[in-house]
Every structure is written in C-alpha cells, then in structure tokens.
View (cartoon, rainbow over the protein chains, first blue to last red):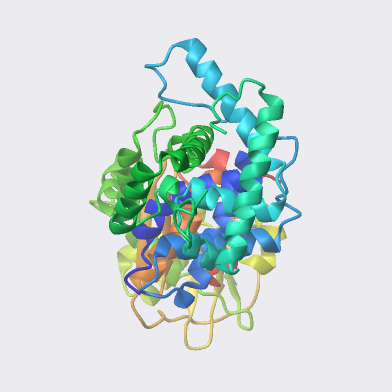
Length: 171
Length: 287
C-alpha cells in the first residue's frame, strides 16, 4: 500500500486540521477529530483506493468520524481564538481587523446547520470539486450543490447582519 | 444569471476546475460581464474563509517536533521536521548518546536496540508468569543473557528496569509506574517467550523459561526533548511507521504515556510501547 505512507499522511495533516477546525470550532476538538481520523484511517487503510486521492479519502474518513460523534464535537460558544502568526509585515490595526473578521466568520460558520457546515469548507476552503465533496460526504452532487448554496446564502445573511459594512464579504 | 457551469457553478471561484474548464468559464465571463459579480462575491467569501482558517496550517501545536521555543516554522520546514522524526534513527542516536546513561557502555548507544531487547523481553504470557527478585542481579543478568542470546543484551535488559510496558488490561496498575527498581517480572508465552524487565512494583508470580520470539522486530525511535521513544514490534516497517505516526501525535498532544498506550492499543492492537524514561518524570501518567 505504497500510497498510504506515514509521510504522505503527515503531509496532509495540516489541511485535515484546518477542516477539522472549521467543523468543530475549537483547537482541542479539532485535535481530537484529526487524531481519531488518523487512527481510523490507519485501521481502515486497506479500504482506500490507490487511484483515489489520499487527501479526499482522508476527508471521507474524517467525515465519518465526525458524523459518528457529532454531538461531542458540536461547535459551542467556546470558539477559541486563532492567532495569526507571521503577520509581522502587517500593522497592528490591519491585523486586528483581519483577526476580528476571522472570528466573525468562524462564529457564523459554527452557527450553520451541520450539513451546510460540512459542505462549505470542503468546497471553499479545501477546494475540493463538487464531485469530490459528494464522495467525501456520501451524497449526490445535487445535494452538495444545494447545501452549499444554502450555506453560502446563510453565511452572507449572518455576516451582513453582524457587519453592516459588509467587511470582507463581497455579496 | 445563466449558470456558468452546470455541474459545478461555483467551481471557478473555488479554484476546483480543470484548466480547460476554467478557460471556458473565463471566456464566458468576458462575454457576459454581468455574470462576473456573483463569481467575484463567491471568490471573496472563499478568501474570507482562508483568512479565517489558514492560520491553522502554520499553527504551533503539540505536533511540533523538538524545540518548543521555536516561534514559528514555515510549513515546509515543519513538514520536513516531521518527516525527519520518522527517519529519526540517526538524529536519535546522536542525541540519545549525549544523555544516555549507557553511554560508553555499549558504544554508540541508541534506543532502538534497547527497545528491540525490551520488546523481546516483554511478550507476556499470562498463563505461565514468572518472577525473580530484583536483588538477584547476577542471576537475572545471566538468565536474561542466556535468553536474549547475548551477554550485553542481558545487562542492558537488566538496567532497563526503567523501561515501561503497556498492557491495556492492567491500565490501572500501570499508574504506579515509577523508576522504583522493583522486581523483574518475567513472563512466558507459549512458543514466544520473553522476559519483562520493567518497574512494576509488587508483582510476583510463578516460573517459566522464555525464548526469543521468531521473526524480525522493527523499531522506530525518536527523541523529543529529554525522553526518547521507541516502538518495537514484529510487523513490517511501513505498518510500524503508520503506528508511530499515531503514537507520536498522541504523545505530543497528551504528554502522557497512558494516552499513548491507549492510542497504541486502540489503533493497532499492539500492546507495548517501549519508552526510554531518562528525564521523563514529567511525562509519567498522572495519577
């Protein structure tokens, strides 16, 4: 199973953590989710198909783990801060602005229904195609598209409500 | 708005389209500028998502290898360091030699061979356990050397009273892990016998004569601050690497042998995590 190597998986861990963070809303839960995904992926690695992208398959595994333990990882008000390191070129005000916008978006994303919160980051953040997202979530492409549309619209409404100037949002 | 792409209307903004498809969409947008605004809005939302979450990619977390004081590593260095961890043997040997209590006694002392010994010495047999008092050092060293088929290995195994063995069924008792110099606990498994050299206190049981298990033992070791870790098991290297990934992750996240042992057990059915405990007091499981 040469496509399933520790190095290959390790290289994908940051993206796994990013999606986990979008799903769960906080660092510890995202760590747990990523950890459990790695464990499950290792245990089930024979189920991965060589011709499929390991990345997509890992997202699929993560989705399974997440759904199985949805209650445990439901985002709560305890959304924690996500520090922006390496922003040394930015001035403080711009950094604060960006951090604030990031917090808003994370809070709003966490308030989306689960099925929409699963879809939106896969497409918009992890840049999976609709068909890959459908594969990850085990649903028809049409469902993915409609959930994404509803999730996006909800995001837009919520963000516009919170930020009347429409900061960071184009419509 | 006329759909830009039937199958993936937002694919262009999501950056998820193939080159040919993207070119087609861009041509459409040039011909129909009125369709560009929603696509641009979609793209801006994606940018906002990235601004909100991309910090996770470079986030320092407990997976960080080695120097915790390092302020921030670029991603490629981070990945390279993680990869290096699993290559680990060379770095491990060098660092380990710097602080190993066995330095000078076994030459280029490394964790890996000791772990292999401890592994061989720790295949438990519940039905025929043996115990030998720790005070019988000469007897034990001779005994271990014979079973391990090496005088050096026997002495090392004896010194490795500090080595720890993980057994899920006895999790509660393992909470007393300490460098207590307690009695050697010697066990034997049918056909695959071994010696358990560990620091579990107060366990004394019957008699048995272990022999080394057949089959190649693979070892992966790594240094992470003062403690060094090694996984040893009779499975192929690739599988052991995958296990080590999980254990390494768990150790660094939880800072706990118990947690790592739990992970190891849950993940692989392997039951032993051999741990070199030099300077590891802070890593011992919390009661």
